[in-house]
Length: 266
Image 1 (cartoon, rainbow, N blue to C red):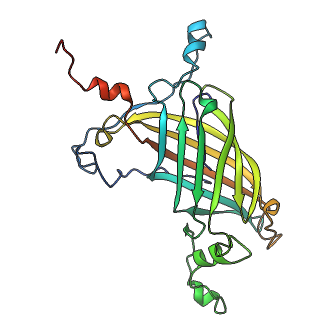
Image 2 (cartoon, rainbow, N blue to C red; image 1 turned 180 degrees about the horizontal axis):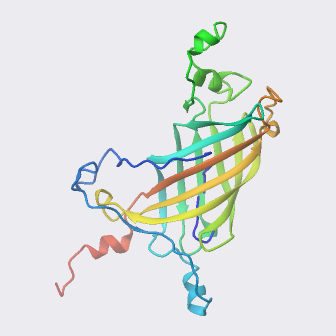
Image 3 (cartoon, helix red, strand yellow; image 1 turned 120 degrees about the vertical axis):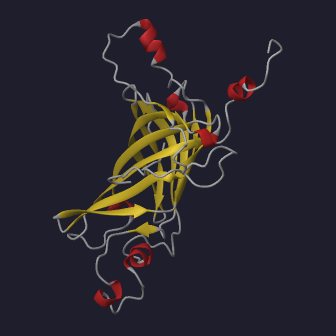
């Protein structure tokens, strides 16, 4: 989670999708239509002025963002892990099925919290060759399946879920912070700390008055601490986890709903 002052998330190098979200549109314009108006986005700007009392006060709130429960918008969310391979390259794997829920407080971002669940069976990897041709004795039909299910790797048959639950957060700057939480992987639970950046708030017309907020997050773990020490010397012990994504407010803010009602003067 990237908090202005300061969630999960959590993949390696992340590529931002340009496509519009699918699904229900709350009765608004088709999100893939060329005529759809662009999103109005408020992104953080660098503060180059001297700190004043008013600046310090405004820095305690994420301008334009509403408090409430936010859920991951999966069309625009990316989570990866990267290891060093043979000491020669960085091998990156994308998780393709994960979810997160955030309780977000713009007045006090350090009180915000997040919970993340990841399906280790849902992976996207680069394999240019035919897996079965190169691994004729493998019980698995593909490299993603082998990476997910093999006991040397993610061992998803025995441990079908990876989770992260935040336990605290701290500010490191106006739009950066750290989120500490418990990561459960391969049946082991260990504390990890994420470096988080807040990317801004926006509003898409097909979501009505609900806010979208965006974050980047990154951490590094040692897989051996979770009981995985396979292929030492080929795969690094250090694993870099990176996340970039958007969170959609579950419900429109009360003041926005109230503002849509006509007043007596109207």
